[in-house]
Length: 152
Ligand SMILES: *[C@@H]1O[C@H](CO)[C@@H](O)[C@H](O)[C@H]1NC(C)=O
Image (spheres, protein in one colour):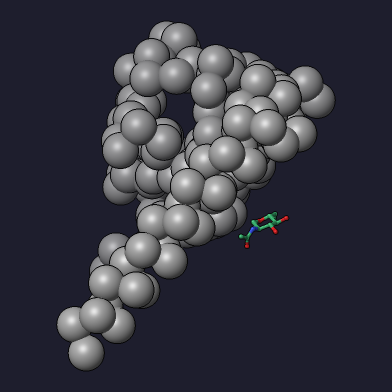
């Protein structure tokens, strides 16, 4: 029984030995493997949106949040734009519009939330989350602002 175990161990060791010899003499040296692996890596790391931006509907005075999630952003940047006139509202975590009701929240490294407070009817419309890759990538989320309900 015990001998059997030793046999198995020596067979495994022998196999390991041959694999190592094979690796040294074989055609797949690490240096030759590397370029392929790097190429594979850069293909995998194209920035991509995770899921889609959900449209929302909110009454005036309330706030609206549009969520954009990106993976493999790498060296690229994420921006939020107003779709109708392509005004840039925020770049990465920084707000660039004068509109003080707008803020951007950067979370979990890959999520950018555009937040508009005290909604006005003029905020109604679509907003674009854009990645400055080439070609440029974008996703759109729309906000429907409901007018005030009549008070009795
Ligand atoms: C959001 O609304 C826009 C415009 O109405 C539409 O094109 C888009 O498909 C909607 N997105 C979702 C996730 O429903």
